[in-house]
Length: 250
Image (cartoon, rainbow, N blue to C red):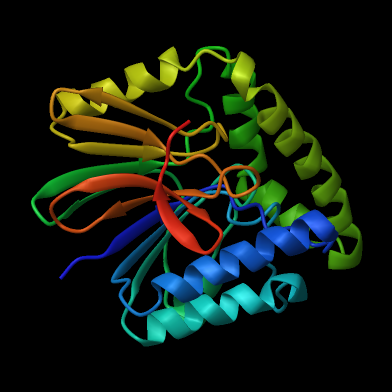
C-alpha cells in the first residue's frame, strides 16, 4: 500500500504572530489527518523559514513539529526532507534523532511503477545566475563553520531577517514571473524517463502536463495549503481547506 504526500514551503517561523499561529494550526491538523494512513512524506524544501544545524542545540520554536515527525518515523512512515534556500543546512540531526532522510539538492526515486524527481527549485531560472553563486558561498563549509561561531541568540535573528526578505519577495512577485524556465526544466527530466517532477520555491501552485508526464509546483502553506498525493496509481494535486481535502483549482 502506498499513500505518499508531497508538500513544500511551509516556512515555519520563530515568531508566533496571529498569521503564523493560524498556519501552524492548519499544518498540524493536516499532519494529524494524514497520520493514520500516510506511508511516505516528502518535504520538498523550506519547511522552516530558517534552519541551521548547530552542534548541540536546536531551535525550540519547532519542537511541536519535530515531535510529530519523530512519532511518524517511529511508526514506520518514510520521511524525506529536501533542502530549500531557507533551510539549506540540515546535518545529521534529522537522520539520527528523528529518522528522516535528508537530501541537499535533488532526489530521484521510484515509487509504485513511477519515476519521481524532486527538487526545491531555487536557482533554475535563467536570471538566477547571481543566486547560484550566492548558494555556493552560503553552503561553503568554511562559511558554515564561521556562522556556527555566532551565538544562536544573535545568528538566528540575523538570518531570520534575511529569510523574511527573501520569502516576501518570492511570495509577492511570483505572479509576475514567467514559469517557462521551470516547465522546460521539468520537460528535460521527462526526456530522461521521469514520470513526475515536483518542485516548490515559487509559491505558485500549478500543474503542467506533457503526454503522460506531470510537473507540479507544490505551492506553499502560507497562502494556498496545497499538496500532492500519490496512491501508487494516480497523482493528485489537492489543498487542505476547513479540515478537508479538496482538488486544487487555481
